[in-house]
Length: 540
Image (cartoon, rainbow, N blue to C red; front, top):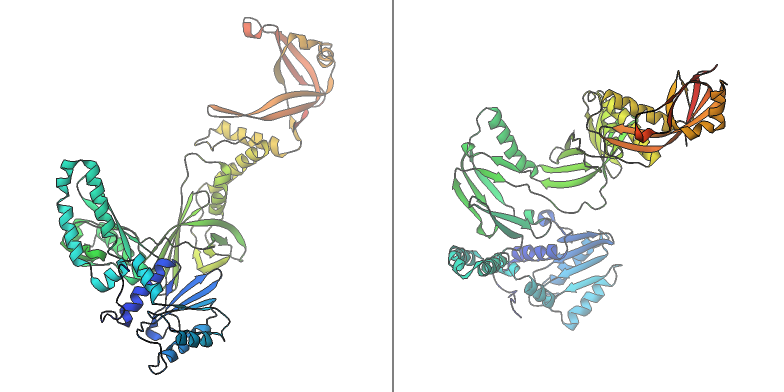
């Protein structure tokens, strides 16, 4: 078989074997967790927590036979006994030995008394996996430095490929990239050429936890002056190490630095700008439900804002989570220092140019409840994390913004007519919103009036109500129907019809409209109250 591993190779000691096979299992199972055996791994070198239960892998570098005389059977028995304490759903023995009939019989007798399946992953299985992942034995047993040097020479020769056309060049560079990605079992690499001629090399983890199995180390000598810029750059660099966040150290602060990176990328450098990308952890946060919660001094929940994780970075001190509300308007940054069990939360609010009131309402309600003397805590799966964070005084004008959003949300929800929040409002438009909201949210509104003017076709003068008015009578409960329209800037929104019932009305004047061909045979009518100045208004 191609890439067959000689499991008796003297370079393949127990530590190298465990490292190589642990990485293999992590590649096969992204959820895998390697257990540090320095203090005793309790029968589990690698574990995989799954929704169906815990799967445990025990790695033994034995070769030859699994006999009693060597003590190997006793070691396997003890490992299985310890693993059983963790209630696994399956236990795997991974050892480069193809069992004999006698060894299989012993293994079956040993495992029969346990309630979970036990599987012997033997030499044939390991050989097959190494053939599928040739970068593993190449990295752990053969070394790849000579091949990297050879590839670098080839890259330097790629200018000649331009004479054969861009297509040939692209194919050759792609082949070199694929070969390079076959050299390291922990990371893959991508390349991009910037307009200024610089080449960016980006590393991507092949599996969660690769950065622990093969960390990328950065060191150097930096000189940060006691200025605002110097302090800011120093803190950003410290945060990169502590929490994995991205940072840029300007060249004037860098004397020299060194990078120990996989596939021999790195080296020592004199000066220059240092850019550190974020150590982004893309491991899915299974079933993680986040929120930001505010309680008053009596412990009563005043606001609860759901959040979703957008990015997670990790460093030597802990992790940083970037979260957003479901509408994308509130940004929350939470840092967890695992060394001192401390959490720090910062949040900010961004008003989008176009958004519906219902999207912004939860965030603005949260800001309105963020008052001095109250505390905010991060919530994970319904449980509050860490002590409450003290809140500053309320954001100015937030109460007025909350009232406006509630009114607009009610208007849109009741009418079914949706429109983005205006970027600015005149006093007249603000009053119009309040008036429309009052009509839509009240069954009947009672108003006082002094006169009403309207136009009607001349033929409408023959209706019973208009005839009574023309005769000088006071008409009781006169009903006029008109559209409910909200005017905001250059836009108008038809929201339904209003019935206005005037308790008492009489005719003030009738005026023919002349000189306008569009209004021919139209009459202007003006009415005033009779003995009652009230009118009821209801939505139809």
